[in-house]
Length: 223
Image 1 (tube, rainbow, N blue to C red):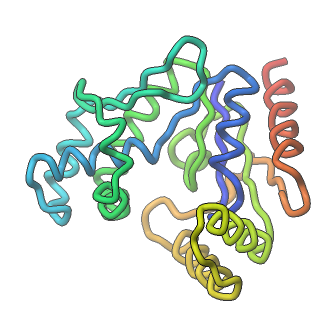
Image 2: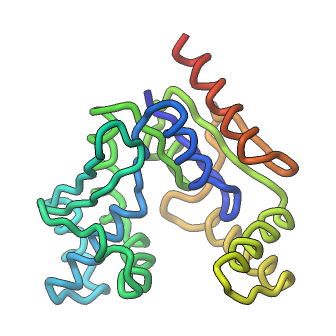
């Protein structure tokens, strides 16, 4: 079974997806890690991030895989071409490079093929902005998480504060609105609600309530 969770920035997709995977005993597919792996391999090979053909070649030819310890839902190791890049993809260098790599249409096309191959091999929970519309249009469960911009900005500000980062509420809200506009109007795989997705407004809901709601949808789909 594939559970696809989409939604705008700050809607809680990543946190919810990981908790749902753990609750159901599914694997969590970290698509962001896949783009980071391509970025790291490109930099290690000395390629410019503006060299889209080189990036696309890496994405198409280098198999990206995840390893799990025992029955763990969250991956413990990330590999590209058999090389362990678990630590390398979480560095400032990868942080700066991944957004450039992820914007490439050719890279995204190659990544979709790899993601689908992983999805065919096991039960997974995967989140993003085009999972139910582009990556897994046939997913058994599709959920579109949303919340008011104000609520999502509040959550992001709280996350920043917890990390010891200064956060201005008004500035965070404006940044959230700009991100929404970019995500919904981009040419490649814009953020949209799949016709058969269940829209779940998380404003006022706890993480536990959202996870339970999705778990119930999964149980209904498998019945």
